[in-house]
Length: 135
Length: 356
Image (cartoon, rainbow over all chains, first blue to last red; front, side):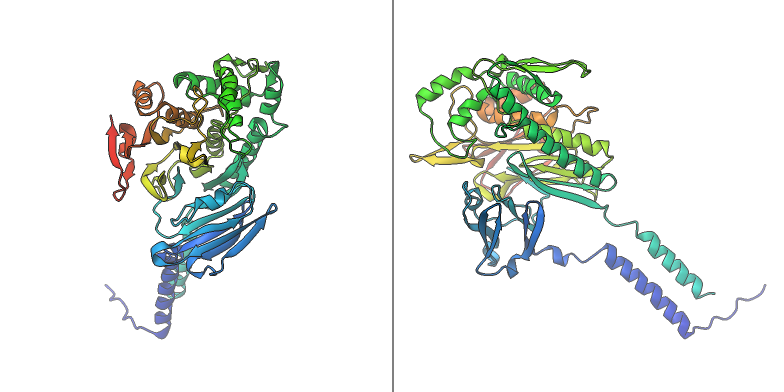
């Protein structure tokens, strides 16, 4: 029986191995991304079904943000204090004031809805533990 | 060759993996039926289903809204007791409403509309009506007086509805539930395996989540909007909550909520703070009123009836549903069929009981 040829490692072999490892790592990151970015609470503002703003609570401007639609204007403010992280509509000129009465929301999945203005402020991210909320 | 071949294999492997990962999501958020709605569907058929559901809900609103002057319900209400030709949707929904009303001893009644109007809930101009006003309106409340002539085979014959003299109807307590029945039908018709439908607090979850786990549906604590009484783990299920705290106003130091007891004309005062009704998917071959409409109607009816009658109806087994009740005296009651899918909030002050 012929003996197998002696294998000699060359630079090209090393480069091929590195390429395969790099591809494997890239696949890993593509399909199993790090979960770190999911733990931060983010306020997502949609107007008439279209996403308008997406602001992490920690980066929310201290003076708040105003949003207007359908002739009504809402002022949205956030508190990023670790013990009371949340967002609320502090002012609105809509007739029902349901959005203001909702108060502060602080859990992922919760939302504040202003029907007359068709503006929704929803909290996403964090570790709320729920997909939907009823009640 | 010995280098090129492994590289080629690696490239082919990478390309083949591009089919993995999460199934494609299609979502829409829109306003209809006086509330916000969100539909998210995953995988094949998702885009068609979401688009279809949005259209269907808007179509239903055009038919069923009492506050739209050009709706079919408005035309029926304006007909002053004349026999009116009605669409299949409206006829079927009125018939279903009558059935659920009978099952709940009249605690759910679509003809309570004039009383609800007297309280200002339809125009957002809340007020406490005078007793004389209620005394005049209460005799009009009896949905069994509505004559429904429904073509039994859904063939070419027309359907007709005739309201009793002086009556008017409001389908607000059942329309969103019916819309969720229609959503289930469209999801199934488009071959969607995983979806969530949120229609202003009426939830239908289709299949499981894309990762195969059940949908986690939090039930809000009536006393604290930032807390849950518990979390339901659901698949292929409807879940709807009714509670006075959802819509109320204060006058003269008292709080009045929007769930009117058809018997008294006043907000229900039965000892319950919230009622959540859970039922399985319909898997129906036709888009007819099903468990969505049932959960919607019963969440209102059982809130009016109170704990004892709610549990009696559940025990009867006539309808396939489960309950989560929150009582005024601080208890959370969970029926046996849903207990293993309900995760209590260990940090809450409520006393949890399983009803068997």
